[in-house]
Image (cartoon, helix red, strand yellow):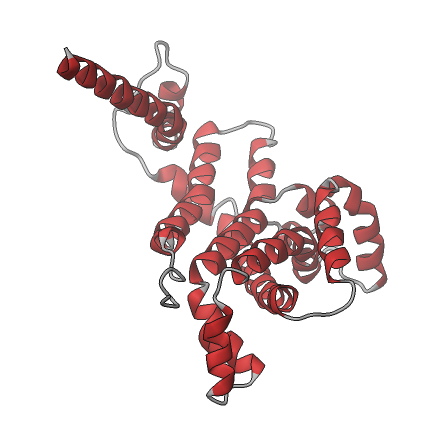
Length: 278
């Protein structure tokens, strides 16, 4: 009787996992096969779950005829620089919050979280006014600054919380051995914080890669559009070609998946565990 209960429990668990995977993966599967279908197959009834032939023409048209190669380049530029600058500023700021003692530190942390609680749409007008004064409207570098304002508060909070888990004894040993504070950060604290740094970097890259609202408001020239704006432009054309829309959606999604898989091991590791022996 007990074995039957265990078997039934396993069946329920595995069945739930399979159902969950189907719900999560099916939209992505449908997006991929729709990008390879012809016009008649896209609107066929009943729906066809496999195309008659796997045609990659839509990808060629999206990349080389619809300008998505340029949009892809712009998105990589904005997302990469946003992630790098965010990590540099967040690591230094979070270390100061986690380790250094100064007046107003608690108030500073609360202020950081308070800023993050404001909806992004409320920051559009003040950010637009500030960027307009320095000539950064319709500029990819101005877009990077807006994404930093959006992602830096939560990055500071996440990294500061992680840096507090790094044993202070390790850093003190480095100071005793002759390292200065900057060397302690770069040679000890940051290597032990790779999982948190990877998480923050992926988070920042994803925000900058997928963000649409700020890009829509701050960019006018189509040559400076990022991938989300390019996708909307493609979707809003007079005759919407759904195979092109689906192909563009796949192109937008794949880099994020590759990035996540590349850094997955860092997200799961606890490199600090066992750093100091009791």
